[in-house]
Length: 352
Figure 1 (cartoon, one colour):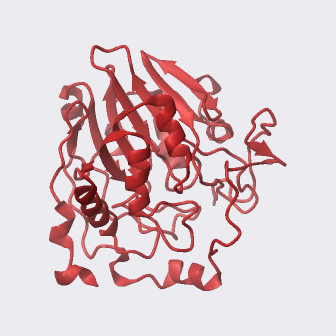
Figure 2 (cartoon, rainbow, N blue to C red):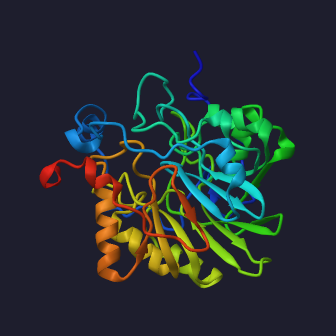
């Protein structure tokens, strides 16, 4: 049985990167000494003692997608496939972020967080992809089986330093893999993709912690008559890097922002909902689409809590929040708020 490189790290050294120090990548700001850290009890509760509503009682609603539907949709369509996987049509080509179609996000196929819902479209039914955009190598963002299945139908994989080494070790042709450090850019079909800083960590096994780089991404279509700027957060805690990205790139039409899997023990690497909204404001975002939620239970909060909190905070602070159902089309030229589809599945009284 293969365990996805769990005991080894098939990545090179990247001493040319300012982020690579002592054989590992690092964040801009060190972890605060006083920050709480998960202890044995926290980890035990995470794996074996989660509260009842950390997972839904029934499968979440999904709007099924077909290849024929996707072939007919207009430019600048976006679909949530689940968690941080988003499918976007930009300048005539399809792009997908952090494609995860696995039933579990774990090095072990029989253990670990399990999906709440089926993807709205099967992996083999996806159209040919102009590109795959990867933020980092954690199991809930980098699905080995999905990457291998997509390799034949994808033109280019844009990823961070070291992650490309993993892809090549899995059989993705080197000619299709492009690796970037923070603030480096790639241009494809008039689109510019820039890897931007994030405050997180990486690794897929016992010995490879922080051997690969993590990032957020800025996606710009500046050659069209109507320019478009998208921010994809990947994973990460709140830090002043959001404001710096906002200063460098200007206002974003939409931010695809992590809000989910938060806990008092790891604020350094995952944002709480109020921080998600603040990061969106730091970026000068117009519409906020909360991601990294609704597919896997990766923390102790109720599965619906990210949606409820971000929508409430958005209303209080005048932030436009989009919450499309999985598989529902979102027009990037004119986003809509969407229904509060999760509320029909919440128990009376919110499950408190």
